[in-house]
Image 1 (tube, rainbow, N blue to C red):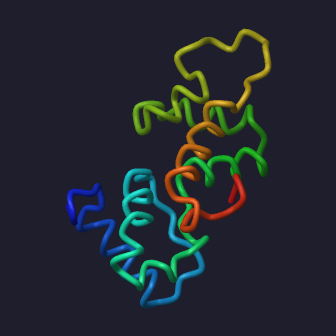
Image 2: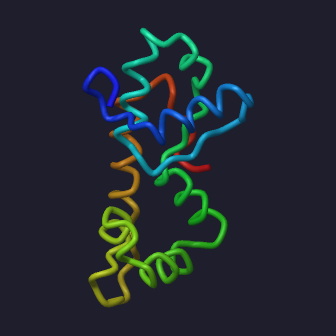
Length: 128
């Protein structure tokens, strides 16, 4: 942890690689690391080069939903529900399909929370 923030060495290395290689995007499942990078950009100038290039897992999943549909995405995510608790909650993996349409308000809520904490660094669209 740097300056008491949740940016561990692995995420720090990913940021450094993305900066050095000028990668168009950096996808991470660590929302706290995105928020920490936002806070650190004032003291680590290189982080500002990641502006609009950090993508959270939920944005990537929204892109999957957009491409294959919510039902197909739900089947795939719920098949491995233990991998990510937040996604399993958002896709209601614990519930049997009861015929009502699944809404992605939980997923959007996660994205908006990250956007609130990292307005400069987070990739702008809600889906990748």
